[in-house]
Structures are given as C-alpha cells and as structure tokens.
Image (cartoon, rainbow, N blue to C red; front, top):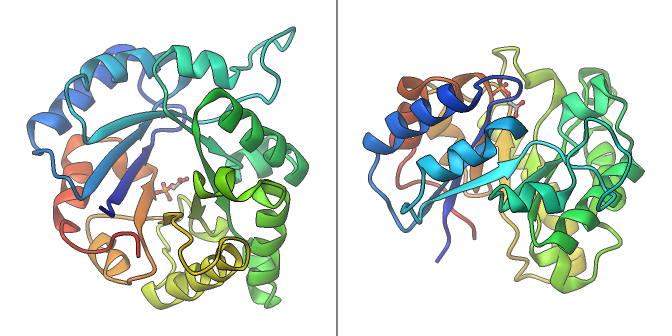
Length: 256
Ligand code: PGA
C-alpha cells in the first residue's frame, strides 16, 4: 500500500539525549498508521538513540543525513553507508542542498553515494532542486533533470525503483518561503516524467517536497496528488510542530 512519507531532517541539531526525548514525545502523540511512514534523519551521533527510542514502531524508520561512498578507510570525519546501517539506519539522504552548496558536493559524488547506499542496503533519498537564479532563468526543470541523470541515471531498473526523490528548491530551504503547491506539483510532474522515462508508467518512487514546510502549509502541499511526502527541517525540531504536520496532513497525499 502507498504511504505518505513524513521525513524529519534535523541537520546539526539534537544529540542523543535530546533526540531520544523528541522521538519519545512524537511517538507518544501519534498512533501507527499503515499509510504513513515517519522517517527521522538525526545527526550521525544520534542514529542509535533514535533507533532505540522507536523500537517496536513499524511506522518509523531512521536514516543518515549524509554518507561517504567508500565502504571504509582513511576518511576522517565521514560515515560510510555500512557504518550507518550498523547504527540502525535504513535510509540515507544524498545530495541535500546544504551538502551541495556549503560543502561542495558534486553531481558526480551524489551518484557515487546513491550507489554506495544501495550496495549497503540503505534506501537512498536523492535531493534535487534549483537555486533562485536558476528558477528565474527558467532552468529549474533542466537543473533537476541534470541532478537526476547524475544521481540515479546510471542505475538499473531494480536499483532505481528503490530510490526516493526529494524536490527541495534551494530558495525555499530555511527561508520561510515555500514553493506554492502548484509550483511543487509542476516540478514533481517533471521528476515523475523522468522516472517514467526509465521505469515506465509504474515507476514506484516516492517524490517528496521540502523547503519551509510548516503546520500551516503541509496539508495544501500534500493535497497535490504528485506530492508523496514532505522533507522538513526547522519544523521537525520540536514535537509540537512536527506532530502538527503529521496530523494535519493525515489522510492526504501518498504514492500513485
Ligand atoms: P526547512 O529545511 O524545512 O527548514 O526549510 C528543509 C530541508 O533542508 O530539508
């Protein structure tokens, strides 16, 4: 059955104790539902705490915010996909705009990371999205297609089917200015067209929207049939706003 995905990207917030407390607060205020997945992306140091705090809840999964593409070795400060898996992660974000724009992650590196995630048994969620200048120049669909080509374009059909895509326009992240539901839906259609071009009409990939999602706009974004979930930064950091998003949006959206 299709599930709406509510993904929380905590970025560089919440060590193990705060992570445990937040997950417990969220889970005590939500009941498991078959048609929704609560997905937490804590900092690497808090992966295990979130896994432990969510044990017994089939509607919850945990992911790494970033991984390195090498399986092991002299890469000080990095986390391999295998290490994240050992800590209990089931997902990995790849190519978040902060990785691309603040840490210089390249399109080619996103392809290596997606492949490494799949090889380790993690489900990759590839983030794509244009800058404001690219949107103003009418380049948004071309940019996203380029990011898809580089990030997941080399995968065979079965590997590609295991990938989720998050459309996150750079100008909407952390700014309080979200894409309108119509603009988000238009970009999601372009992403789905790319996926269908590879996988046919049955392309199963969830396509999430991210960028200033809040309790006030989540329901209208998820009401677009092209929007299969949300990837949320700021509003996922406190139980109250996160539960409000999950509950407000309940029963709308979903893959397909
Ligand atoms: P935001 O971040 O919800 O704070 O805009 C979204 C993200 O970076 O994934």
